[in-house]
Image 1 (tube, rainbow, N blue to C red):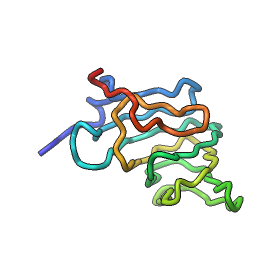
Image 2 (image 1 turned 60 degrees about the vertical axis):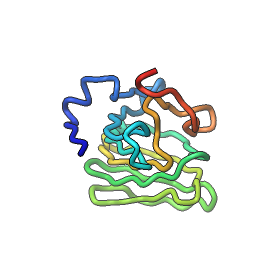
Image 3 (image 1 turned 30 degrees about the vertical axis):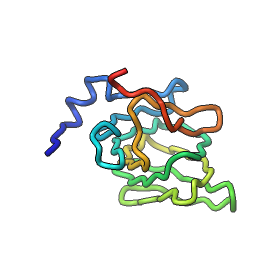
Length: 134
């Protein structure tokens, strides 16, 4: 059994801050845990707007708090995000995320992240990024 506390994990290298200052993510479950997915609590800062395209990963995102929107670029549909909303990027959907207020999100990635990933120029995570133990 694996048991971790968010508050404790936030004080370790499991907390990753984006270079652009749009978000921070505490990675509670990673590839090394051998569960087949990773689980993160991510904070999207108020006013953040950024384009992402997870070409190497599928992601599910559940909004715990805050509000914003996600726009899928294939069809330019805009979906409201508020507490209780789940959105699933099941087609490697290229999208724009916008935060009207600070949003706390629970995120699941398949395949799992190693730990230190930040978005590359295309808004994706590299498949074989460094692990936290590197």
